[in-house]
Structures are given as C-alpha cells and as structure tokens.
Image 1 (cartoon, rainbow, N blue to C red):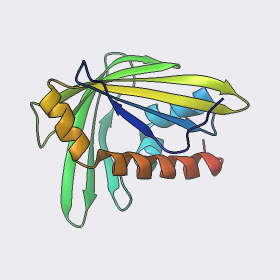
Image 2: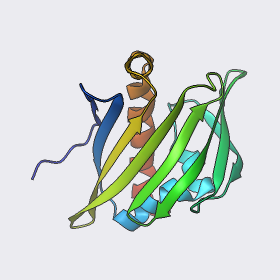
Image 3: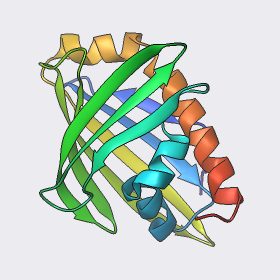
Image 4: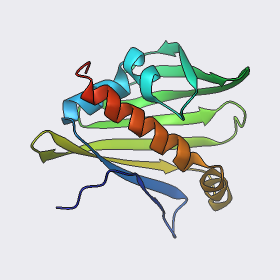
Length: 160
C-alpha cells in the first residue's frame, strides 16, 4: 500500500473539480474531530503564520460556519454550510468572502487504512474550469501542505 505524506492534488479534465488525497497517522475518528471541532480546526487550518478566529461553527447537518484568517493586519474571511456531517464523510460549501460568487461544494471522506492510519480524500467542485484553474494558480497547495503539517503536529501531540 502506498502512503502519501504530502498532499496529492489533481484537476479532473472533464469536470471542474480539484481532488486531493493525503495520509495521516490518525484514526478516522481523530480526523473527523479535527475537522468538526472549531477549537481544533482553528489550530491547524491554513498556511503558516496565519491566525484563525472562528466566528461561528455549527458542525451538524444543516449547520453553518464562518472563520477569519489573518496575518500582518490583513484578514481573509470564509464561510459555508454543512450539508452532511457523518463520522466518515463531510459535505459542505466553501466561500471566500473576497469572491462571494465563487462557491465550492466540498466533500471529504476518511478511509481507514488500519494500524492507526487514515487516508483523507477530498474534492472541491467549483462553478467553471476557469474558476478551478484560478484556485490552482492561487498557491492553494502551499496553504494545504502547511496546514496539514500543522495537523500532523497536533495529532502527534496527543491533544486529539
């Protein structure tokens, strides 16, 4: 079995979807918790040097969320709705408030690899190929990689 310690990002050639996959030294339950507990989520999401403030967070089917990430006086706000919240799968919308017309539908699921390891699968469906390609050009992989490195450290700390 192949394990991935860096995120694998793939753009679907037929649908405006970005897919990514990454393995973690964690159980599916731990990954579910760090994606649904606002205090834990704020500790790892985003690139290095960003502070995340949760404005509201209702991680249940039909709930909603909003957080603000900041660095050096600049703030970036994100919001969305939880469409499905299950221990093995999360479906939510994701909107960067700087581009409010760019709503993505995100699906995350947790594959138990055994021995305390889990593969995170995620996909973001955006409105157009142009929008998808703009996301890919934005440097999103840096924020994802750095956020997941912080998540690795959080998981290793035993706090989760």
